[in-house]
Each structure stands twice: as C-alpha cells, then as structure tokens.
Image 1: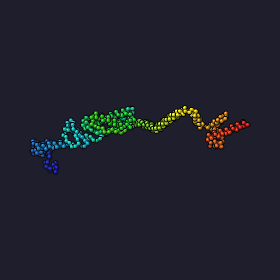
Image 2: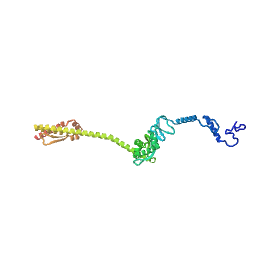
Image 3: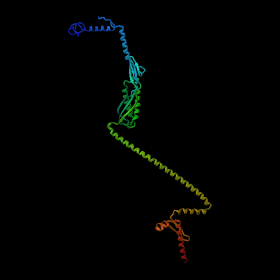
Length: 378
C-alpha cells in the first residue's frame, strides 16, 4: 500500500511533516550521509555530527583510483604503427615500437602514426609549358611516413605541405619542358623528375614523408583546343611516316648504289691492270723485236709488213689484186658483189672462203690476160 493512500499510516520518507509544505532538503542530505557512513564503517548515529569516512575507506578509494589510472595508461601499437611520446608537451627521444606499452595518463601523450600504409594524393591543374602552350596535367603521388618525429612535430600540417610541394614541383618541371614532351613519350621522364624535386622539397621542410612513386595519369591539351591539337598530331604523324618511308627507300637504294660504285671501281682497276700489263708486254715485245731487227733488218722488215697486211686484210671485205704483167690494180668490192648477185651466186659465194674466192678471181684474170696477149701477137 502506498504511503499516501488512506490507511497507509505515517510513512512519509521525508519525515512526519504533515501538510507543512515541501520536503526539507537538509534533512534528506543528513539521512544520506548517515547511510554512507554506515556503509564505509562510520558511526551509525543519526545526528548532525557524523564521524565521516574511516582510513580503510580512503585506502580502498585510493587503490581503486590507482587501478583506474594505471589502466588508462595502457595502450598497444600494431606492427605497422609507431608512437611519439610527448611528456608535458616535450618530445621524448625514443620512438615507441609495436607492442604493449604504458605511459602515465595526463602526463604523457602518445601520437600513433602508421608507417607502412601507402597513401596517395591526386593533383590536377592547367599549366604553361616552355613553348607557351597550355596543358592539362593530372598525377598521383604515392607516399609513406619514414620519420615519425618529423611528421608529428616539425610541420603543423604535413599533408598540406605535400599538396603545396607537389604543385610547385609539377609547375617547375612542366614549365621547363616542351608540350610534345609533356603529352607524348616524355611523361615517364617528367614523372621521375617531379618525384625527385618533390622529395627534395619535403626533405627541406622536414616533413618526414617519403615519396615512393609519382604517376602521370593524364597529360593533354585543354578541351577547348583538343580538336585542333589532334589535327596537328595527325599531320606530325604523317610527316614522320613520310620520313620513315624515305629513310627505308634510302636504305634500300644507297647500298645498291654503293655496290654498283664498288663494281665500277673494280672494273676500272681491272682495266687499268689490263692496259698496264698489255703496255708492258708490248714494250717488252718491241724490245725483243728491236734486237731481232738489228740482227736482220730486211727479213724483219718484210715480216712486219706481211703481218700488218694480214691483220688489216683479215677483217676487210675488199680485195686489191695486182696482176703480174699488168699496169692496173684491180679493186674487187666483194661485199657489193655478193649483195647484187642473185640467190645462186650468193649461195655459191657464201660457201666459199674469201681467200679461195680471191684465188679464183686471180686465175680468171690471168686467163683473160693471156687470151688478150695471144690476140695481140696475131
């Protein structure tokens, strides 16, 4: 039965106050104090002069607080983490390694940093090249923390420093390069140069960041002039194609021309050697002939004359006949005679040798001359 129901009796927890107004708070606090004193071993009196906490109660409270304080100082670092301890704001020399550690709470502050996670930063901007062209370049910087103390203490916002250093390094490299180099086959070299310059900036700032890779994701002219640029690139490709075809033709023609030139040189050398050898042989033959001529002049002269006439008349189709006892020399153009003669004469003449034909003509002439003489004698 509730204390305020009819017949419940005088069970007012705030005291027997009847209908005299709100409860007395001071009395309620005194009752609560008496109850706590009883729990922790204090005197059980209900008066205003309670004895308070005992020594054992204070020891228990102190032990409990010590346990809570010690538990608050325990922490663990994973294998990929390192810790920096700040004692009243002053950094400790040693870096905390992975494992279970304890530092006094409210005295030391431990900053945990992941040193193995590869983080990335993407950057994209319009930049002016050395030849005064605008290119749109986007890159990705991959980095890790290699110096925990510098990363935590030396720079207020190391990631923002990385952003600014990336912007500076990229603009410096692109600004000193040609547009063709930036957007074609020079992208890898530009990425390496940006990485080297960016790392030098970060080391100078002592950010504790190590750049592992810089990838040039895209480099192209602005969208407003991309069509015109594509036309220029096609023209350059056509130019390079024509140059390659010309080089291929030159590589096929030049060796052939060199071979022909070498062949002509060899032929000229052979002709030279032949002429020299022939001249030396003629000179030697002349010297020997001269010795024979001095030994027998008349015989040698006749022999030379006969050899010369034989050489000349061998290739001649004309015959001069000097008939003995006659005053005239007979000229026989055998080539004309053979052309004017009919088929029978041509067939008969063609089967005869020139010498035999000449002998036959001489016999006819001698016979004719003998007939003429006999008539004159009559």
